Image (cartoon, rainbow over all chains, first blue to last red; front, side):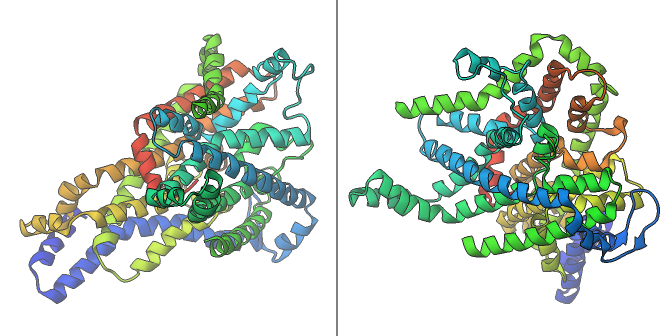
Length: 304
Length: 254
């Protein structure tokens, strides 16, 4: 490949315009070819395949048989999935509100360059460098009643007397998972907001201050409106990420207690690899895919 | 001053879990010995993780550097379609195409293969990487390569000898993102690898909590967390500037 490119490159530099154009066209293709292969084979092909799979009875092992639209009609009879939809929506709403609030607070605190501020930015972001699975296992140990430090600390200051059921009841499991997600992602979202905050020219603030605007007025009249596109981006990422939640529930609560924290993607996974029903999992995937692409498009149009 | 008090309290809150995990894993150093013997041995899983990350980083750099140059400097039919198709990867939720990818890799003989997993990671990294590299090449002055071409270099030699050197910061950013994503990812290896000996660290360490016999060894678990976390923490602290630049360039992915 190197050889042909070198030769045609030389022609490109010295040849006639038409030949040069043709040669540059071929070279462009050659440079883009690896991208085209990866995108074609590992992205476009699976997109087509997931639709085809959803139209077939497709066991984990063995041949497929066309059975459309059974995989779709049976979604309505899948109580686990319907519960998962409600649970995931609830989780998404709470997480997005809390995460945005915390991230905005952090971003405003570290917005101005002051001595030592770099340390705090790094400290808040650092959990984001740790993998989500590792973070889940860290919390799993930290909140364990016998092994973790949190229970003894709460007892020592007199806040609790009994072991706390961190993942033992449905609402506590949700609460603990959200704490984990905020710890892991607040710094990431803070960084997104910082890029938006730093794009606001300081003259705007100075002008407002010389007009006698107070802190709160500056925040609501200047910062928030000018930050809108960045806030929108953060909201879209947070909503999409939460709707597709898997790792946190698989690692941390394993869907429990009593399937109360089973997310939508977890149902897809269980259908495929515990019920060996790849066709059903594909149909759920297609539904999720269409819903999320639709939602993303809608949010981008409304928010930006 | 009160701002610094708030900031310090928050920093303690954010750093405490990491410090505790490190402390809990070291409290009894035999935790690390236990972990080294877990399953196929942590060495096997760490090797798998290193291989997958290395292949992902190398693959992402090669594909996106070639593609970025092609998109920045050449016109060819289908260019816009291919660029949009690549960016569309961001629109499609990752979790929804892993099931067909599992089947497809089976057709290609790459099921349960570290190579197959790395190729999937390269695909997921490509929108961000290609966008970064195209912008980096576009920002280079055209004189740089024209001088090389006049000197009789082919475009590929101009690309590999001179231009690649000039976009090194962008390559570091792309490589860092590719490393963090492939080292940390849990869902893709969980689905695409099904044999214990080929597990990467996240899948192997999570399986420590799902043993059917005996109690969970929490100390060993935190040792596993540290083995996964420390390379990322160190790399992030060292290459922070490059990470933040990735954010600034506007191409974001969680």
